[in-house]
Length: 253
Image (tube, rainbow, N blue to C red; front, side, top):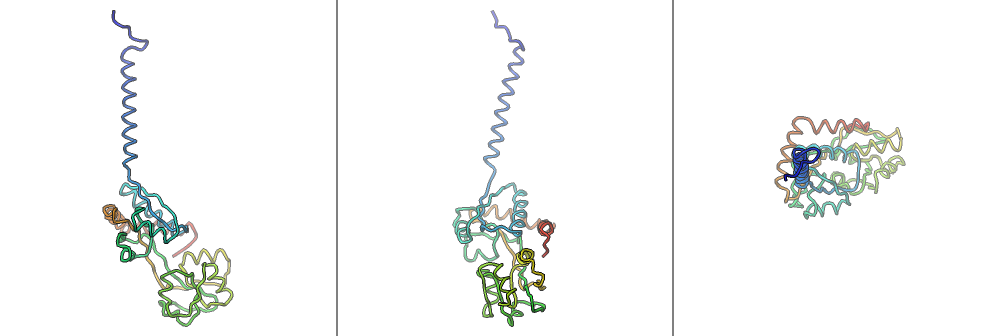
């Protein structure tokens, strides 16, 4: 005697089995795709400001275009460089150019993702800056440890401080004649201390381009990323991201 089909018949049971099997196959494919997606860990100095926002968005767009995601690992500056150059992480978020000369295992992606303009801030003197040499007559305040400023003002009358706020306080108190810092930090600080007597002189005394670095183990990715950033530079994407973020923060270059 043949077994009788259930309420919905043999066809329904077969369809149920097919649906279950298909679901498992689809789940497996999705899971495999997730597992195979490449995620890079990028070291970054544990300091966040508008310039970091610009770099983060530029890199996010660039990496998305080559099908890679990244996560940021924040840490003190020296440790960040130690981990990226040794390969403990995959790369360095943003640094000044030329780092590969000292750390040959770090590959510089040779398209600037960001930049800083270093400007003179003044209260009592007004002149048109013309490079570092034009600062020679003045007592100069700056944030201790900013290499580009230390190099530019070498041999001059300088009075460094531990924070940009202290640099501005010295300027307000008349202990220095001028202060030098990047234009974005300076604008934010002037807004914070609300002192209308201090002005930012133009043009900048220095323009510092910032680059992304990847460890040598990621050389293939570095090549792909560089081509993508070249395209983003050419079509105006990098500049557009910068302008949008600065405008939203009520800042300007």
